[in-house]
Image (cartoon, rainbow, N blue to C red; front, top):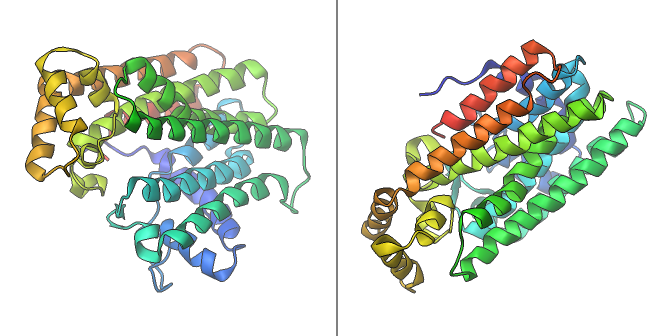
Length: 341
């Protein structure tokens, strides 16, 4: 089990009150769905101790402020906003993918219905912009406007990445380059935003903002590569998702794309299974996973994750950022690349 970096809990304690306050602005029906999704409530509204996800994005936001010499609290509006955007995407992704479980319990759509889940996701998206632009407790600064413009751009890229991911279902040819381009948008854009928004809100020099954004983008590619591995070989008791779920959905994730574009008997067998119209049984899922692993899809994806991890660390090395914050950014990146959930 990989040790969980302390900054995740430190950032959660800093950001969660703002996140709760934002969600509590919703009308009661939507508020219940949002609180359920974040793990603060059960379906009937009673308190829950399930808790939210890893909290990677708020932690990155806080560290990005500290990395440029500012107080981490300055990043709270950006950290709150990006966490709302991330969770809006999760609520909608679960509908698109037909996932019935997240974090070891029913997803929002499977607990409350698709229609209500769609609207709840929309509400979280809108809340993110309100947090950055409509906070009556502090003035609307140039930095807050810049943070909002950048969030809109990152969200646009994330949605484009999701669209490309869905389009892969109808494409017979998907290679590593196509996967990386899609994942840079779907995952990298929002992590790039997270890792730089604190610096933006602090009014830091552009060179530092750029370095932190590159770190986050590359970290996003490493994160998604690890996710692709866990989507096939992850332990469901740890990940909270069904084993081999990505294969059942015939997703062309990185391990799959590497084999489908690799030629030989492995490509032929995998393509035949992916092109079939029948639902995949547990035995078929196990067979596909074995074919991909034997053909090197798993090892090459792990190597790709390491490549982007190294690029992320290089981006923040020797550029003048606060050493203590850089150390925490390094630890967080290593956690991302070595996690099992």
